[in-house]
Structures are given as structure tokens and as C-alpha cells.
Image 1 (tube, rainbow, N blue to C red):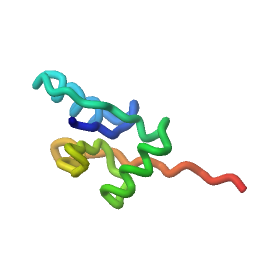
Image 2: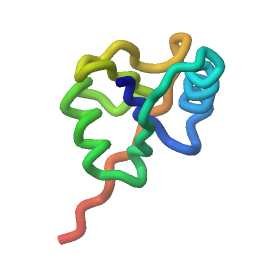
Image 3: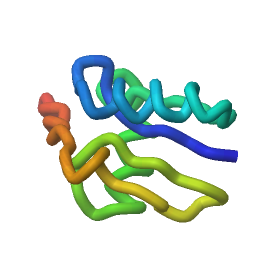
Image 4: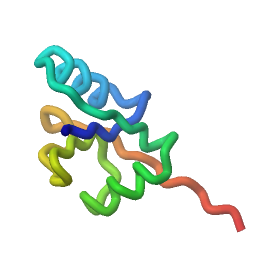
Length: 79
């Protein structure tokens, strides 16, 4: 199963999503700005904050789309 990690505002996430749909591939999508656990998974898997990230069977198969990506801001921690 493919997993797509991205954000609603990232045009490259949108392009990759549209490409996956066009190819008829099934995938689960996670918005890392809305889902803190998804953001943690991206950080653990890639060590970075660039989206989109495409994961297959627990392995990163693609970061960015056609050489481009968006940088996700880390949430602020309130004390």
C-alpha cells in the first residue's frame, strides 16, 4: 500500500496526488499539517521536512515531485 504524506497547500503534493489517481494507484493520504503523528513519521523516515513523501511498504520511494517540494513548518511548542 502506498502512503502519500503532504499538505493541502503544497502544489507538488497536489500534482503527485493527481498523478497517482491518473495511474489508478491506491494510496492513503496524510496531511502532515493536520496530523502530528504523520509529521513525526515523515521526520523519522526522511530526517527532513520536505513534502510530498511517497512511502511504499514502509520505505520511502520518493521525496518531492519532479525535483520540487514544499518545506513544512514544525508546530510551535507552548510551555
